[in-house]
Length: 470
Image (cartoon, rainbow, N blue to C red; front, side, top):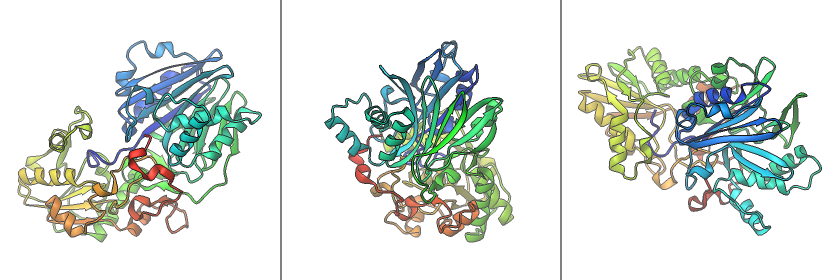
């Protein structure tokens, strides 16, 4: 879905491969399958003959890597990144992977997530003489590695990893190895795969499918993988904390054909729709989903309710990212450009409009209005996430609490604001049961902070929006 045009956007996707002669080209294909995770910039760094070289730019993967670009990125190892920037983090210099060179060797770094203590660390590092070239919190990690006095590079990485807080899935490439690390709470997904004798690491398993790789396992929270000519070695840099994987990965961010920590995303979303139909039935003629992430939910709702599913909304896939438009009027016009109601389907019908979330409410209001303009006699809105009442500091660009429509309003007040005939959100318990993670904790191993305000980690200065680095 458009997920509120402005207000709910995943930061990035990462992909790495070690031990394949066409590493950069395979990374290109992997990034293409992760394009939904970031559309503002892309980059690839490859290792060849003891050196690293890279190419990056603003725009989509296909825009950044034109004909011949990949031919220059030779080598049997590579990492890549697709980026969506949050507050203050746009610009070419922040496009990853970040490539660092020194007398002790080069390294490239790609990161998915957000470091909640990055500002504190940056201030301390600058006090010690560090000079930063970007406004990305990712660069903080590189400085911590280089300042470590530990005897080996692995120990330097582990020391640096122990100092950072928040959500992070890192890929780091040197001339000698590919490293993958996941934060102790496991906020972000990260998986290990195989392609013949080569090893692959990616944010989502759909990136394995596109290159013909097979899934091996998840990277564990607090784990550091070292992939080299000797194979894969696993070490721990921190004790495993209670798992807190982002709930929105299942609800919105991940592609339906991905598996996130063993759960198929399409199946989870269908189950969300079925549970939503039980919790919030509607007397209606058709069910339609807001493309793309809500389609699976709408199918589940239709199956459980017995109301037929119809393609009531069409997404124009050739329109740019309208949520960055500078005015609310232009953003709302962008919604109309991106989505079109199918008049012949919705005219004269009572419609259940299934969506994944309501953040600011402006997009929901516009879609409800479009359905009515197309002839829908009733519009009943059903949401497959609980109300989002608190901002996220772990790598999702949610608005400040003041902008979140559910932060200080009742469901009935939201219904009136978006103009729906009825509105219902799935319950937190229903969401957890529908996704079906086997974790026995009350949170089922998911982060619920944006719904509850109970953050799994210390926030530090990350809770001050004007200082957020990304």
